[in-house]
Length: 320
Ligand code: F6P
Image (cartoon, rainbow, N blue to C red):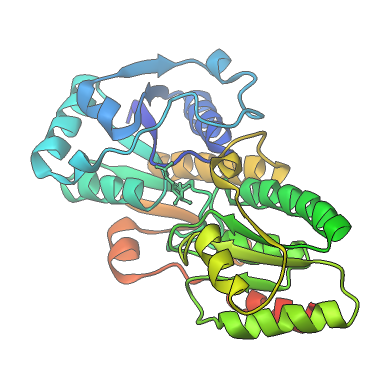
């Protein structure tokens, strides 16, 4: 093996640059060449590929976004597009590909593996919803961005004795809501993985106000409904002087936390070491604090991300 390709795909996540740096530098220090593919699978099919030098990796570990750019490219679900991608990889003499991304990107890597092209997935998404790993690159940063916003909202909510419904990202997973909500002392965390009862939440908030609490905070995962819709329903059960806020893409940017930088560095380096051992067709992850690599096809076809819903019970036990 001589050349490793790297691409980032799907929704970006802070820490992707740290993963790119790790893969490229680990490859270069082992005597291999690293090639960056711009614009995810769309750029792969278009042949938008360039060699990466170690010096290109200088000063990127602390930058959000991805120097390789990203794209959502549903066309890659078609076999003829996948084969075009493999043609480009062969044209550039690339022997193996490391894909950094979320669920959709993993499926791209899975398809290439099924066509016999050695691909490895590194989990990079703020949603933390990839099977085969406890944590994804970008999740910790997103949680901390959301938490910073929630702390600020708690300040103004308290001054005005208001109730805020704050929608955080996480298309189908409540992980960001659970971690940020617990850390921000939320009155309720509403996630797609667990039934909820708006009337019960309203009763809880009312009791809180009666008992002297001066504000309310509901952290809502976007996969449930919009903050505006939730607020509208909540208002039917009480006079809360409520406000609805959607944090949105702010959670996807900014300086990655130390945890995301180190996790990304560990994942990237591990991917290269596995390729050097002649392994591939794998999904990288961390489980119980240990690096793991599982068969990418089996991981995607037979496993699901499991959200730690015990965090919901924890919040319920500790809330006011
Ligand atoms: O990358 C994950 C994610 O941020 C989800 O949390 C969110 O639902 C989605 O991407 C938004 O996608 P887009 O940036 O394409 O609007």
